[in-house]
Image (cartoon, rainbow, N blue to C red; front, side, top):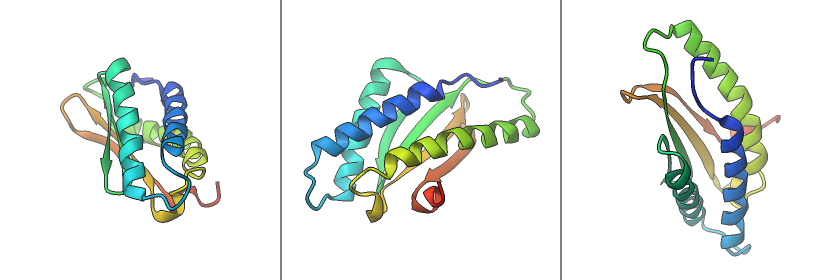
Length: 136
């Protein structure tokens, strides 16, 4: 494949950080913004230790995962379309399995995935939220 990334290790880290965020916040009425903040900080802290091409940050009720990908300069739009479909089909079901277990899922908590090339051009940008997880 023309893109270098490790989705499986990402999903494993995502599960760990979501579990830690769940434990770090009281089970009572959880503030979705605080939950997103803690989850983003945990994920970003790990990215800083292990991966200089990824970061995580809070944006309202979302945890945004942003990845910088090294791809060929001559990648066609058709190849990118195939990659987008494959990436989403792998990420969305696994992320939904994690996010549905959070105490703030029904309060609008969601993930946003942004993939950029080295020049900063957005290759893909999608949400994993309640509508995306329906039927999975």
